[in-house]
Image 1 (cartoon, rainbow, N blue to C red):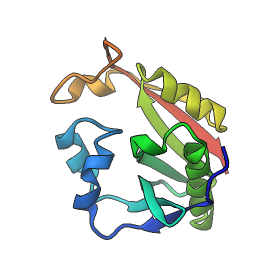
Image 2 (cartoon, rainbow, N blue to C red):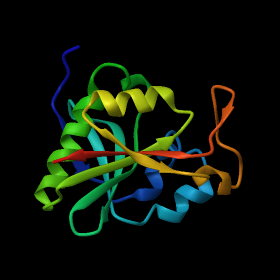
Image 3 (cartoon, one colour):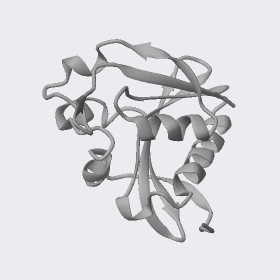
Length: 153
């Protein structure tokens, strides 16, 4: 599918982005715990917002994608891959050498996506989702571990 170039635009109103960010992290208390960390961007394509991404610096050489989500109507057409490319470009401008991301062990589609766009397995954080206020359930399965990925920039 051909789509407009994707760019990231700093978002001033973080509160307005909460409904979209909850698509990627369904625990609002957990989301609010990091909502004001790092840099929040609107993912823009064709002059319209199609998603959001929250980036947090990790140490001296890495940027973590703490939360990334596209509105449902914009999924599955290549915008996700283009958004990751735009994130990588922004991370490079900060001097980062690595891009990090994590997802639930039950998120098989997301895991496949990260591998397809160039991330490599970087371990897991056991029991990460066990401390969430409510169980994280996907496809009838309860998430326990965070699967971590890394991309060299």
